[in-house]
Image 1 (cartoon, rainbow, N blue to C red):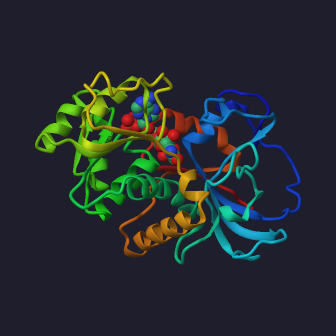
Image 2: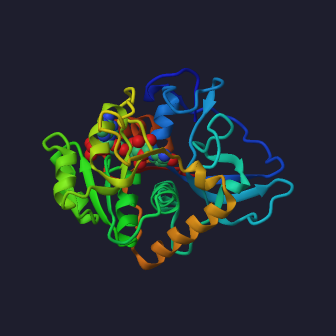
Length: 328
Ligand SMILES: NC(=O)c1ccc[n+]([C@@H]2O[C@H](COP(=O)([O-])OP(=O)(O)OC[C@H]3O[C@@H](n4cnc5c(N)ncnc54)[C@H](OP(=O)(O)O)[C@@H]3O)[C@@H](O)[C@H]2O)c1
């Protein structure tokens, strides 16, 4: 699947290409399921943090499948092994929206026992992203309050589960009341509907005036000033997405120069560091074993309907991950 021009979902096209043989440090996988992420929609429309360097362009960074062949120097994965591809590479270099794909072997994790292809394509991006921001970077502690917007996204739900596992209190923010009940079912201690309520006021009320130790913002834009007001002294506002598409002001001065840490973050900080990825995979696997972590799959689409899958992503009606399956 490639796009030959920048644009909406309709520019995605199925092209008949030979994937070729894996080079040094690479593996070729038979793709069984693909995790659809906001990053691909942004890349397709050239609004991603990394510009499209050449057309036609491949896309996709998260999948599950089986290793078909490995290149020279590859250790740790073998032919016939069930694996997941985690987002550890540039979409300008590799793309997993395909029946077969070549990827860096360092981006492969063995699929845990009992995890099928659909779950294997839905689990890693959300939980690795949440673990990295909250545990590795944010140092979340029991008793902390963690506020997150776009809470119904796959990453948002994983962040709720991660906060609960860490003994912290997750407060979910959504724009509309439609998703409130579902967010409470998924473990949110409170839901704030941002179209109806003042987010900072609610967070301050819920924390006895203290504020939240971590605020995870997937939206950015002008709303950061209000979110900054919801952060406890010494706490951190993590900017991990920019769905608003608007310029993001630096809120520190408008807020009177509080003890506010602001940090951008991507999961690449985890997936491109062998030791951090090892710790993260152990954390996620242990959550899967106990049932604390359960990837939420919103809807399945066949690969031929990738355009519809992207339209559904951009409808913002989903709760959890959209997964594309590859039939043979
Ligand atoms: N930093 C990283 O490494 C990393 C990794 C993965 C994902 N992310 C980010 O995490 C976010 C979720 O990604 P995803 O692929 O899991 O889910 P997604 O399906 O793209 O998330 C969709 C949800 O985001 C909310 N949303 C969309 N546009 C919005 C806007 N303009 N203002 C406020 N809320 C908006 C909506 O929830 P409501 O309508 O309920 O508010 C929507 O249902 C994205 O921002 C993505 O870029 C970051």
